[in-house]
Amino acid sequence: MIAALENSVLVFDIGGSHVAAAVCHRVEGAYRLGRVVSASHPAEQTCDAFVGLLHSLGVQASAGIGGILGAGLAMPGPFDYSTGVSLMRHKLPYLFGVNLHQALAARFGWQPSQVRSLNDAGAFLLGEIGAGAARGVTRAVGITLGTGIGSAFAVDGRVVTEGPGVPPGGEIWNLPYEGGIVEDLVSTRAIQGSYRRRTGKLADVAAIASAAAVDPAATEAFADFGRHLGQALRILLPAFAPEAAVLGGGITRSARLFLPAALHALEGLDFKVRIAELLDHAALVGAAVAWFDAFNGSAAHSAIHSQAQAV
Image (cartoon, rainbow, N blue to C red):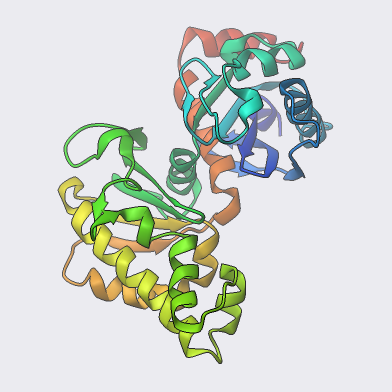
């Protein structure tokens, strides 16, 4: 267990309404996630309240564990991941302009350099590469399916946002598709809209999925979603030449309803389509993968190790 304690970081997955936290241990190159704790965003919508929530969850997750080296944050965008400054105005607006790395480091008594962040879709993909469905894959794409569609591209275990076949910033949600953009037809609202056109009823995606066993309109709505997902990936991914595309996010809980249509649209292409193995925990593991990748072998990492017990 000593090795685990010497290679442990706090990790946070910051979503639109909830925050999850855990300690992730790296032992002999393998990643092991500890107990996951979570909470809703604070009712008091201020920076101090939000940072206080992160600190509280971190203390709970790391109870009884010494030598925490720092923290990795899986954050939605827009966010300056290198500096830790939030650029979000429409979601978590009270964090706009705040340096979250500095604020969280101050609560734990760390140096700001001990806190790192990355895009939540990138964290999802790194988690699946490190300990999930993309283990051993050299060129991988991660696709998260939920309110919108998130994406990340990785080569040799590192997220890339530019290069051959990589769309600007590694994002596909806003790329042209069927007279609009990809997210118009591959998203929660796309499934809801398809179902509503057939039935006149507005329902959430979980309810539509539950009804699919007896409601043809629900089955058809998910088939439409799968067809558009497959067609969009068929257009957008071959230039990158991935070995595998890993699907995650809340909608993948209903993969049985849309995956056959997606795979049919992708017939003849070389890459494999896999469902995430870590699911909701992928971004937590990925935040640790990114943290250790940033510090591995560096002088900063050695310095942090030397002071970890004091932290």
